[in-house]
Amino acid sequence: MNLPEYPAIVNAHELIAPMIHRTPVLTSSAINEITGGELFFKCENFQKVGAFKFRGACNAVFSLTKEQAQKGVCTHSSGNHAAALALAARMRGIPAYIVMPENAPEIKKKAVAGYDAQITFCKPTLEARESTLAEVAAKTGATEIHPYNNVQVICGQGTAAKELIEDIGAFDIILSPIGGGGLLSGTSITAKYLNPGATVIAAEPEGADDAYRSFHAKKLIPSINPKTIADGLLTSVGEINFRIIQRKTDEIVTVSERGIVRAMRMVWERMKIIIEPSSAVPLAAILENKVDVKGKKVGIILSGGNVDLEKLPF
Image (cartoon, rainbow, N blue to C red; front, side, top):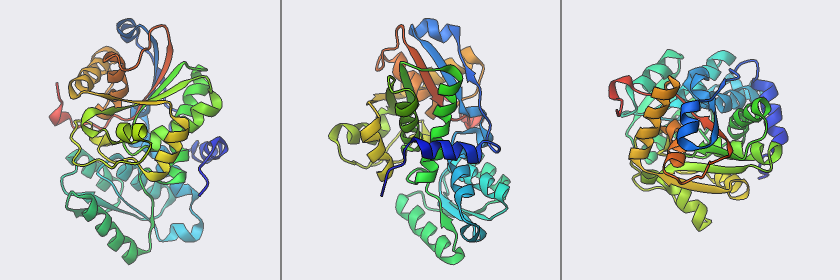
């Protein structure tokens, strides 16, 4: 299959622009002082459903033909993608069938139910998620929308970096977290086209470092039993995503759990905004000196703000 290029991201943006928020870009002079760089935060925590995932889900749902759409969409997801797909489906007036692991965060279960999706719970293993989804798809005829290993989803996610570069201009460095690689692959396509001089770097938790290991080994190495507070980054990188990342991402670095909590708290305290641990991973990379930003203009995508307020890590 052909990998998507920047024109597909432009098309995605035209399609979804009326439905998504063009999220603000915030700065913090205090964080600039601490890091020595000029940091611009693209606040996807203010996106619909509280995460960038709405962009990709929206593009995937509204790209379906009338015939495909009639039977609805389905996916397995423990969180943001499930809510995003459920809302996009509701906006198009079609059913959404979501398979969720029974141990998914309560806040994420409530969100998905709140968007009228039909939820099927399963055991929290990838095998259970996939087999349950296969049953649901067979029964309903719904189209599966994978959370990241899907070209329409990747193109939707790439619109966040497009807005960031359009609004603020060219950067020296663009940073994104990496889980399945939807955001990073879309960001990398956009950045290398609009801002070819920028270095595109992804940050990943040490306890879930399959993208880091895969990138450096130049082959996909799935994660085994990942452990991190950044629950949005537990998944292994997708196959399409990895092919794009190999071509268009410059570096992947890892950060400690302590670093993630420190960065998350710094954003809460200094910027007065709510971000989830996954969003804090790129700033953690800067604070742990994995990425040198001194004197540099840096774009950071804050991926989302769906955090369980009963279980804050600080």
